[in-house]
Length: 233
Ligand SMILES: Nc1ncnc2c1ncn2[C@@H]1O[C@H](COP(=O)(O)OP(=O)(O)OP(=O)(O)O)[C@@H](O)[C@H]1O
Ligand SMILES: [Mg+2]
Image 1 (cartoon, protein in one colour):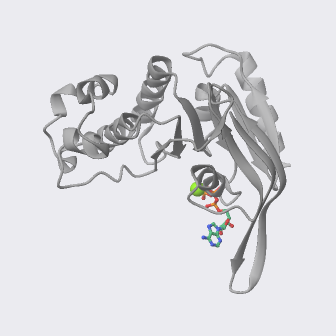
Image 2: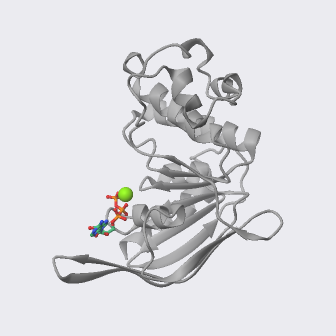
């Protein structure tokens, strides 16, 4: 579980202070898929980077508690909008980048790329490269997979396919996922909980529906309207 308490984040841009978050309190269940949803510039990437420890908090704290409820440093795997693979390494070598005691075949199978293990990134489509990036993050055996708009550069069909892959990965590994998106349909398809950031405030929406979900489901359509109202108010 992540416990975010009284978090404050201020950026200083050419002498001007800009408050991104103030008095932010949030708990994230690391056994679930949590979506961070909000308009461009609302602070989604900043929040993810603070959770990953890549960005300082101005005040307040972010704590991670493991399964035994001990406060520890979380092991983080990250996936970005671009795959960021090493072009000079094969798919297999990219996945093994964290060390050589990795069951690469298991991860290749998880992302359905067994046949491409000796291919180079330049020989892959965007969706395939993103799948390798997911496998690379998983091979580190992280406590949590942090994903920052990982599918937003992909076409509609590839995006849908990768959403299914993420659910498969979640079911197989049980890894906690914190997934940033500005796509509300994607949030509804993937999230156990959607955390909406709007004007620096947070709003939580829980979805109990099983996977795979149907975007035409009345309950999800109504929730979508509710969330859109919240974001646009
Ligand atoms: N290193 C930085 N220095 C100064 N300001 C920053 C820095 N990083 C982000 N910001 C500011 O913080 C705000 C939030 O940025 P952030 O990248 O977290 O937004 P976002 O919700 O991820 O947006 P997008 O959907 O476009 O990716 C923006 O106003 C941005 O200008
Ligand atoms: Mg961002």
